[in-house]
Image (cartoon, rainbow, N blue to C red):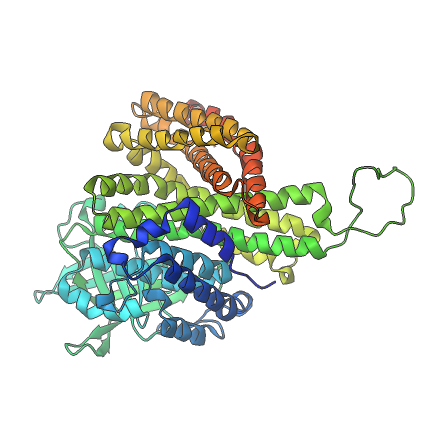
Length: 594
């Protein structure tokens, strides 16, 4: 089935779960009033559905292909679609108008990314990586580098990549061996091999700007000795035109479980000319600017594929006839024949449970992803220093939760979509298997979800002596008074959310009392702790959804209250069951043999 942008749900989230109007009132976004934003999003939704959506299946069945070290072709239709994407200016939306950008909040581009990824995840990875590379150069590139590369990258005429991983340096980036030898003229000779490089070679654009991590001579070991370099596919002449091809090549592309449209390249650098970004040995710090942006966008993939899975599952459940629905007053007698017509499976209780589970998770994820993006905008642009500091802390706390929890849920939603389809869910032509295969990578790349959990308990909880997490817990609990005043319709939401906040608070206290003295204990429970945090923050999102929707005559709002209640009554209680796992310590893990 065709993807349909969920514009009503997006608008609701922008108006009630984040404050779009207050954001657009900030000076940098003076031209991006809410009505303009909604108009832009409506047009973006049409583009993603009509131009990219039809290529989703094409990219899976007729994937990117490697021909020689300098030639990788993307699936049929992708090159034209990318040209139209560039012409429409979608990649430029959040960037500085001085470089050809639209000057909109990052939140707006996150919404556009959601629709693009839901329509065609394989296509979306190229713009996603380019936007991350732009963000990194904006923060850390010098003026000459910014003037040389950003105008073309912001428009999308040139694309960007992130080159970290090597055959022996995956999650342990500090083990990388790529060398950067200074030439004495301000450039460096980059030599080494990088793997898993998304869109490292392709035919969508002529120029590709690679951001490459490498070591200079005498650099300290580990991550402290990593520098970052711009290594363009073609060297750029003084007049801005493209010159000779750099000494780099794509030696192969991977044959993958999913995202077949996206070429995942093995890149070889053979004395390629590189240009140092910032200072030597600061590359890992610079790269985290790009990685944090990318981690939010990867978390968004869980939301986007969850939405696509929901739409597929609902469409199939409404048309698939099977069995007879059991309704009040018409019990089915075992062993007797019954001539009643078969019912669409959407009428069966367990199918409805699966559909509502996907729907509730998607709404909770959308609120979390948008809040995370709003925090990045406010941290960068709010005039009050106190607000900037708190929003930066909150973004730091939420990013690993967004990345890990949402991508885990994206997998669960795609799996439920397969289950709703029954036997047809195992058949490729249904479309359900592709979503399942495509999203499986999301908990792995941009830092595995286990690393996100370790980052949360090891780096983010200790911020400000635990003060940032305590402030977040206070914010989660502050909605209780509003829920109390809202009456019976949200009474169960109030009860379950209060329980969830208590569980998260207890788990946090345990981490500080035990985990910080023995990191193994903290890390042993970190995955369960992150899952608790995601569930509880999701419950808070759904509580606020119910409060905003209560009392409305709009049937869509009444449905939002039902969905929020289902989440808090049925899904949020999982947090209580995870407390024991979060606080078990590392004893059994250490004692086990394998």
